[in-house]
Length: 104
Image (cartoon, rainbow, N blue to C red):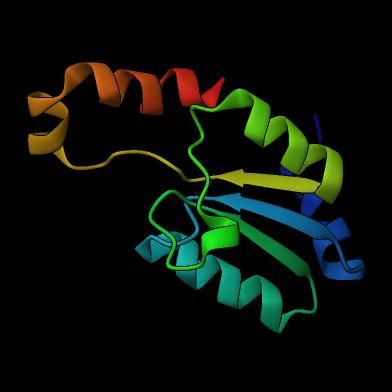
């Protein structure tokens, strides 16, 4: 695993293929803009995306596996999660599957 300083130097010195999960959320949206402005290739996967080709459920391992095989990302920034406490309290199983198993 790359250390933060090593990763920072690589990001600053060359174009990288970066996969962002949850890139349609507030933080992900701004991160993608930041990375694109610096010349990186950035790909978003988010079940809430307005773009059909980005709409991927991180709980579906086989779909993610295909995306990794196609994109071959240098870096993955994992932001996908259900952040709503009321939603998590209402549907504990869905939140567990997304926020815990979807990150493994």
